[in-house]
Length: 118
Image (cartoon, rainbow, N blue to C red; front, top):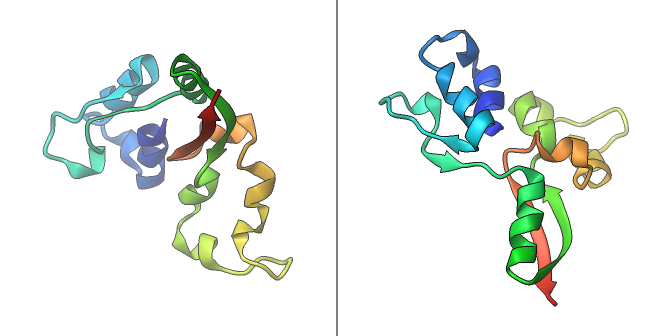
């Protein structure tokens, strides 16, 4: 769940007022922020990757692929994402290798479902 991962990234997991929020996210997929603290994120619903497939199928769509838009790279910080790697390219050179990997989908802050009508 992105709020839990963002909480880890921003050091919020040590904040007792933050802890109930990711617990509900994980239990129900719903994130609610009743506080004025914008670091706790906004009100949102988070799909599990499998739920996206189910919703598309329920809408009579044929799923082509579900992709991780950022994958885990969003947690590395801007310097790590933008800098060159040892292979000479940017750090996004590995993205096509992992963007559809089911193990990576849950680590992405955003998912992209590509589908077509049956």
